[in-house]
Image (cartoon, rainbow over all chains, first blue to last red):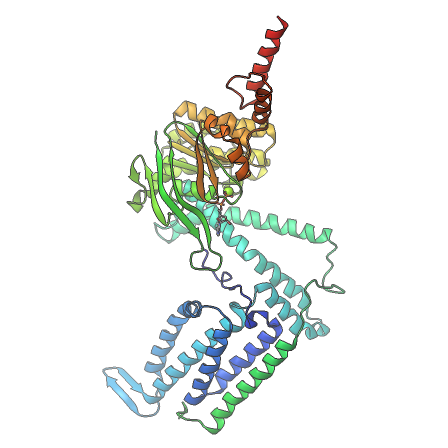
Length: 274
Length: 286
Ligand SMILES: Nc1ncnc2c1ncn2[C@@H]1O[C@H](COP(=O)(O)OP(=O)(O)O)[C@@H](O)[C@H]1O
Ligand SMILES: [Mg+2]
């Protein structure tokens, strides 16, 4: 139960942790754009070196990142197989019975796998591992705040997200507790067919719903008591501030991204294209 | 009737993450047959983790849990029957109630054991009586009960399995004094009527003194002391060093006897000391 998402934030005090969440969000968007724009081996190599440097900078054990790649392994295998079998174009490399593998299929498969790996690493590096969920929603709210001029309820959304994030660990913990309590009375969640298993979950779901509603009620009252009235005129205890480190980071990051793209344009060694 | 032996058990939460917590460390303890054993310790000393090992909800990283000499983890298929024999009431159990009526909720355990309707019905009534759930409450929804009544219903839900070892994690926490006394004496009655061993987790020294035959003191995930209440409370200074202390009345009795007032042996409950004092005063009047 305790391996569920959110346990993913890896507390620390590295440069990557201390960056302004808005800077990290922007950097991640730029990073993703770059990995989908470039397509030459030289660029990916350069990108790999930069990414590796950033991984080290985050002071999070590389094994943690490696573990984070596990969930996408299946997707990578799946898309690779589909690409190999379905894509035609270029020379035919291999043919056996109904299986025909073409050059373009191989290239697509490699390209998609590499991009997915970078995507996973990047989102872990900039967000999930180094940014606590709360500062992430703060960053989002601040980045999206211009939209509130267009009457988009940005503050309300971010408050909802903050509350949801805040209570996910509580809910996980409570699920654990209730499941244990029912197991102690002989509940059996792991045998029987689909229907009997779904039925076995009732004694867990009902207490969870009851307490979730009770908690929502209590939270609403508590917020009311402190005169919560929405986002207007609300000040913050932790004000997001873009410091010198953030500016330097953004500048260096922009240079590197430009370098990767330029390499792709001018020295497209082993470009993955046909 | 059963005895549980923990042999060098250890457990760590969140192993390999930055949130690692060594909850129980190399602990050896025997829960004696037919006795009421109290487990006492600070918040975070590992009491809840320890009791969840007793019925196999938590598997110790190291060490063994023996129920009547048999390792409960030797055959995972038997784990469920272990849980019927070792009934665990978790901390704040009122949040586990789910069924339409209190009666059906108490019957959840017996149903899972595969007992017949008549047998289940008898067990529900017996458990309700021990736990102090009034019969008029049995057909109500558990969500209509008061906090104290919910707690009793949850305790009854475990007693209804008629476990050989009844384990309760802070059964009296957050109840008013009268509620505490009645739930704890109900547990003692259950033990006396069925001969079951009982484990009560608490951080009230007064409750320990009044209800327990044996006391285990936990500190920082390890067993700091184990013995009868006389043996444990005689080590006042060590208890204080752990930050636990002895019942207030015992402290007073010790102070009195150091002033030369002989109070006899039962200095662990207010009633015992009061009777000893009354005897002394009557003796002097004569
Ligand atoms: N689910 C959990 N995840 C992580 N750590 C936990 C969990 N449950 C308990 N702990 C930690 O284990 C230690 C012992 O906790 P616990 O057994 O609940 O103590 P007690 O019941 O004596 O208060 C504490 O330091 C606590 O923070
Ligand atoms: Mg506890």
